[in-house]
Length: 498
Image 1 (spheres, rainbow, N blue to C red):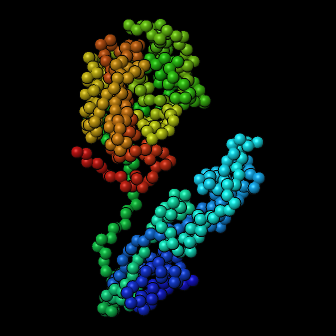
Image 2: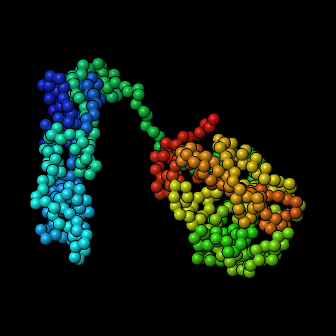
Image 3: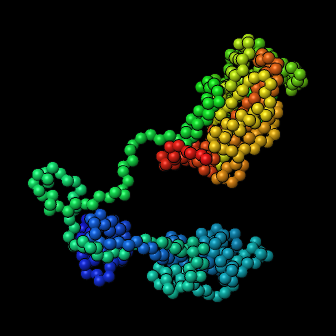
């Protein structure tokens, strides 16, 4: 084994005796060291200037996999199966328990080394079909292990590759030749011109390393904004530019009353099941409610009112008291609209919020159990579905997302309702990015809002528009423990959308 510290000198001495040049892989073999150590020595010598010239070359060769090495030592799976079958035969069920049983059985059958008697006593039985065999697979792998690749054609190699007994390996090597400043003695080049060198004049005899003007500078240590936070800032700025006021959303825990009942969502709705909602154990129930408003909500659910027949069921306050992790920020909108109704004189408002919500979802490429919802609410006289579509178009156009579609939908608390879809260039399909509609009178009138007031509202995902803008196909690459932090570092500071 050569001393790694003197590898550069050893390489130069060998290069001095070579007429044409040296192959780095052959040098590694001759010196008995790992090829990467020789590559490191080449890089070190290249940094000294024109001492050597190194041309990178690629070559392919075949190597035995771990399974291939086992076959060389113990025989192929089919040969082992043939050997395991005695002259009197063996039950198929017993054969399949062997380590090579499943793979070897199929190959041995195709080679016609064994036969299967399905009608044998005691169950299907395996018998030898020939007296002896030649394990050609093992022989071929022997040739490759001994470096005799030329003894096999490409078809045979590819067959062994399909069986994962061989692997084609691409090796990058260097062809090393003498440079214009070739020398066998390695002298370290100076990198700094010091005051002492100038004062003594010794700099005239020094060999200085050339400046590399193409080298990148050291990346400064600094914080990086996550793409999700960048798009959140964009959303927030757009809302503010459009004259919206931000709602307080600092309560992740919400009562079922504000999250569901106040929105005219019935207590038997599937969304209120444990399969869709996270319920709290401690504290399990909320206690503080505006009782007059709660009575009106109970009445419109169980008996109807305000032009509606309601749901006609026995509304229970016990269900309304249950604490949950909020499933949408519409619960916050409901609180804000109730506060608006208590002011007496109605004034038009535009509210928005961007914060986390929680749903008991099955995780996949577009769904998480915890995500951000963007909520927008506009309350005024005479608002229509056309106003809602116009606001959404204006909003997404400011984000650079112009491919939108609207699809009629059902929501317990909006009528009419519609889902919002945007085309995802990465997934090459239309992806739902939000839900919207006009709040029902059964929700607004019990709060005390005037009869002529309409409220348009929408809830949008923050993650999915971010995925569209940044070309991310899997939401788990954007949020969660599988996020690659390098993606955060490399993401653009800003995006200029045409």
